[in-house]
Image (cartoon, rainbow, N blue to C red; front, top):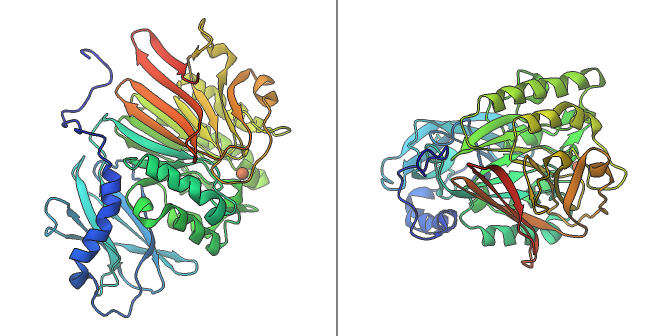
Length: 437
Ligand SMILES: [Fe+2]
């Protein structure tokens, strides 16, 4: 690949599709047994729950962890290279707020890229630690990996959405990151629903993969986003300079992909601030895409620029953001909200081959059981086409990025393939090729 704009790192390729994260997830059990004596002294304080990895701007050298406990204490993150588990570093955390418990956050920096770490969180005053969990820092530059994309989980989480989530985690046990396109729960202020959400993914998943989360309208009440949001998903801290968008707009670079999270909930912005809300993000987005050293770009937010469900329309998002996605040729725009599956592109990006387009891919998906009908009217009314649409399909998506190629598949929990395409970038430009029969 001489002269390729997609350099592979010198890191040795994995000899198999070894499910690293799965090893991490399984490692918690073994580690808990191994370290049971040290980790479980009699403590008054309670064990952490809902331990979650949140991306930093540079996940190759730093990692944010959030968790919650019943007790108010001085929090600490203990972290060590997996290869040297005795070299435990203690990182002071902070108390960030409370819901039905006290929330904590800690960020470890100075980490080595592409390195396995083990960690646990608890009280600095002497324990209340949870299990040892594990993650791997991102490589320092492009390196093959897979990630998961989930649409709205939202309703009947334990009974109706969890089986699809479990299928995704089983199908891609090596996934290094999870993208959530909003409406993770139905009532953003319901601690019980958040309990179901964390239960559906499980601590071994939320604690081993960075969770790239965009808020949906169901995380809002009027002008206010639920307190749970920023406490659980603090963002990478590199968003626009706007108080309303703190925690919810940011980007993170993972092994050659820039993941950008936008907040599409302009209907929940104060009426006098709606224009600024969208313009601030447009301006910021331009900067983030203009100055992007990564060969791939994925943008996620909740409300689709091309509505996939009849009678819906988010024209203000289209007016403000679509032009930027197209100008900078964002590769994937991952959305939710319309409770069906859809994938398409601008008509202008058709090529002579009916199975091939160029330019950005716009996708809409749903993970939970709430379903709406689908229609391509809002696509075709606005210069786009829906290449694939499906009603009544709870799906998960696996995206694999490897050098100059990206593979995307959308599946039901039964294993049926709802959509499949791949993107290549090379001497003849960018091609998005349908892979459905
Ligand atoms: Fe929604």
